[in-house]
Image 1 (cartoon, rainbow, N blue to C red):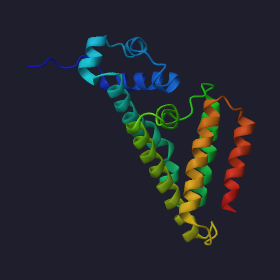
Image 2 (cartoon, one colour):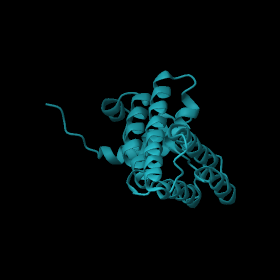
Image 3 (cartoon, rainbow, N blue to C red):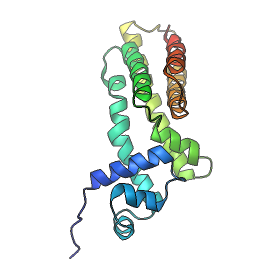
Image 4 (cartoon, rainbow, N blue to C red):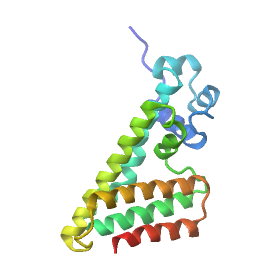
Length: 193
């Protein structure tokens, strides 16, 4: 009979997520993961597999824990225009607030790994499509409510917003200052007019 795990999986995934988010996949060593998670190498390999398998679990964990929270207003605010504005404004505030300049783990991972890792490329593309679809639904709600002009192409504008959202995250990752990111965000939001 296998021994029960002597660690909190959620905590391990949180710690692994933070180190991958901070350093990227390639720059994170197994020793970094051992140090941050508190697991020894044998436990890590037995529980999660190799570094890439752990990273894939972390991306899933990130999607469930961080991304779902990041887009709650986009999904749930009744007025689509207000939902889009709040999503960009909140993201701008959050990415400039903690001084860590981590950006978005999914965007960072796509930029780092997608060019040479088809599995990560597919995960990144799926994440982009989910965000695009959320923007499309918000645009539709705004058009239905009359707060967004009805002559706009929803799919094209949703792609623009999804790509621009990634741009905000990349600006944050490179350490962009708040004023620059706010100017960028205001210009993006002008597409709603």
